[in-house]
Length: 420
Image 1 (tube, rainbow, N blue to C red):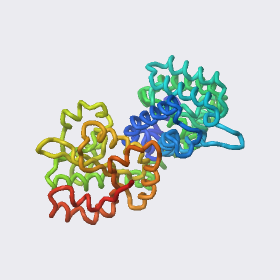
Image 2: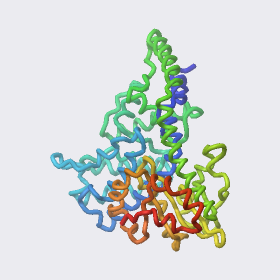
Image 3: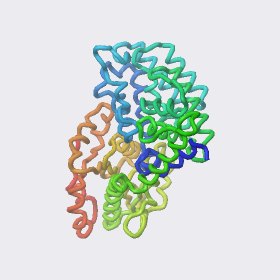
Image 4: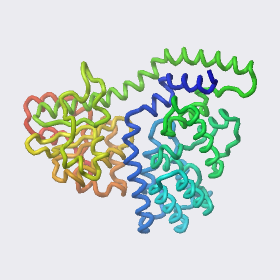
């Protein structure tokens, strides 16, 4: 077996590696639309000259932080965009010309349909020689074009150099494009084990670069044999790594459990219930999370402009008499609340403008974090929509009595706390 193929197979089986812990993570897919919407907001503000000259509190900070919270592989993705006063970089806050060039770059990439157009946009930005704006921007492009643009960070570069014996440098767009070409070739060679989505090959390189895995040595049979023996040890260790598996499953199970509480409560109150389309098959108790719930949403929602985001809202309650949405719930267990708020906005500003409640459901100790996020300029419309906070603790303590004695939204409304 090809040593790289052997490595990929071991990596895919490892419950703590990025393939299972991030790439196959259901929540990952939910964030693509919201991050794309955020990039569009940044472009719009730059074009209308309302972006300002401060990173903190800006729409760009909101988007980049949402990327940075996509589990370990993107940790630190926001560092490149933080204002560094001594170096006066990245120079898109003090220079309006550079800011507009960066906006054109994001706008062009948002509208691109093929790799040649994306590469041309990158090369055009590189010619502007904007200090501090380099390949870290590719982390935004990945969420626009996951099959064309791979993510970028120090560990991915180290992993690529180790696996291919290359000398790709950080901070250089030409080097990034050379690495992209190499990643595309690797991805094509091992497509049956990876994915069209370049997040998979990037995750492999990240785990090599962060030294979770060692790349096979080049041109040394004895070293290669030792590496193969070490891989066998890693495989055995990963199979018994119960702690890593338990941590991941515990987080996912808690999120699913809270969705189950909301499902059962909605059904008890006589509502029709919709579970996010990519969560319906999750195991819960002796059945599935989607048991007893709607198989499809009403036509008015299916035909709405924001349907692709709305169908991913964690839980919806609908009036069985007229099929209108009564309440929408986004469960934010550990991830950024950004994507959840965008999905709620797509619903409230589109096909469900008369719904009774929008709720962010989260652990009790995340309330202050949720409030802080909603003070961002990007969420200025939220104040008009009455989004409320619903804590895990209150929901767990009172859900049974509300389901037993309630008949409408009053019980939930009594528990929820206004956020604005």
